[in-house]
Image (cartoon, rainbow, N blue to C red; front, side):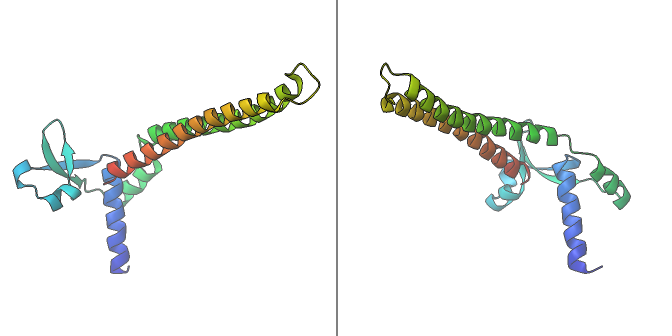
Length: 154
């Protein structure tokens, strides 16, 4: 096997083991940690120290078995993706229902036979604002989930 490919596969194996929490912690005293080291190390709040995750040494067969099992924290990631999708869907639904309600109430919500643009426009503006709020919350949740995953995978 080509040496660069072998190095890449080893690095990917180590990262996957760390991502799944299968590692030991090599602690460093806070006074010995430089700024460059802080970017590579993780921080343990319980022990108030920086540590380097050292993945367990497992065989390739064990690693293949491990890859067949979904990671325990994948459900949590899917849950926050579902929540952001629900917010986005509700916001889109508010847009559609608000547009239809504006047309219906504009046509039948006035005392005379004319279309009431004021009623329709008011409903459209309100549904636009509420729809944007829901879509915005969904986007914020999705971005926070991405930030959490980026920090966790550091």
